[in-house]
Amino acid sequence: MRYLVAVDRFFEDLPGGGYRVALDLALCMRRAGHSVGMLCGSVDSDPPAGVQEYRGIHLVRYRIPRLANHFPLSLVQTASVMTDAVQKFLAWQRWDVVHAHMPVSGLAAFRCIGPGIRRVYTVHSPARAEAEANSGNVRRSSWLRRRIVLPALNRLERATLRRADRIHALSAFTRGMVERLHGSELGSRVEVVPSWFSGQAGPSQAEARAALHWPAGKPVVLSIRRLVPRMGLEVLLAAAERIAAEKDFTLVIGGEGALRPELERKASSGVLRGRVVFMGRISDRELDLAYRAASVFVLPTMALECFGLVLLEALGRGCPVIASRAGAIPEIMTQILPQWLFEPGDAEGLAIALRRFLSVDSGMDGARLEHFVEHTYGLPVIWPAYERLFGLR
Image 1 (spheres, rainbow, N blue to C red):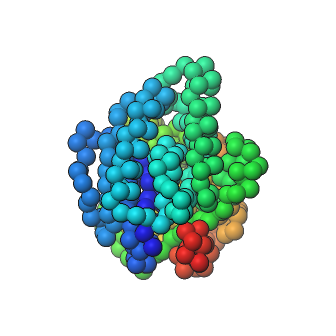
Image 2: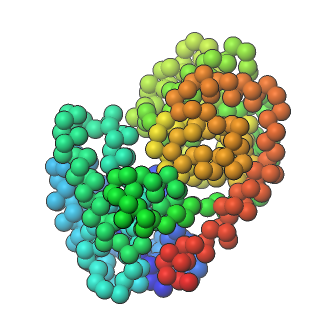
């Protein structure tokens, strides 16, 4: 099969959950012996020209106008650039499946392809809901956002969904949001197929801590997130403050984002001074080591967690998890660790959970967590559903 991915960004250029899933799927298709192409936008003034090779994938980056981030000022220009890139890639080779992961690139791709090519669209996070959740980063009046930007995003995504032959989401939570935003007709067409985790044996906790130069004799609380308001890192710091006087621990926060200076300021004084480490962007090797080295992973999301891939990454390495009930998080956590959920935004609830975890035997056996992920979300378990989605079965 010839499988083409259309996605707004390449994961190696700009890490993000949706971009990660798009790349993982492309790599799995390539390993299965299929011809795979990826068409990715880039805001670089001079992205690499032509078709590149990335781990057996044919990769093309096209330049997106920087004003594209100021929706809707340059939507028409952005769509035109995407459409031109899609047409060139379609002319280069015929594809059997075009799999889009975001509405603008998806609509551009679907408009260009003719009959006989399967159109698959993955809703990672509904466009309107994503814009609302990130409204603190949108420098527009609330009136403009409410009356123009959000309705336009919703119409754009609905047009993309209507052109898709198959609609896919990673969680039942996301399917429900599609139904609320776009109606029962489109919502009923959404097929829920989760992402997966394929783990390998790794170092022990002691070995991982030594490699990262983390303290060997105390608990380490880990959270890896984009450092933006809806990810709940301020709640995590507030919870850590509540227990810092009675519990000895190190808090490690990985990731980058606009909120980092404010988080670092809050962590540099008072009872948290010297207790919080900011790792910044983490390499794949460091990520694996961090999960294995941590005593517990905390996922404090405030809203719109449409799957929670980090849950599988942590649990699959035997790392216990404490998480908020936001979005789709309970779909995974209630299967294995329902007692370690807290309400989104509840710093006291998170503090109680952390205090309990650090005070008593948590009962979270690492081997049990790994077994759960392997047998519920392992690639051999999940992949047949993707083969049906792409028409391979």
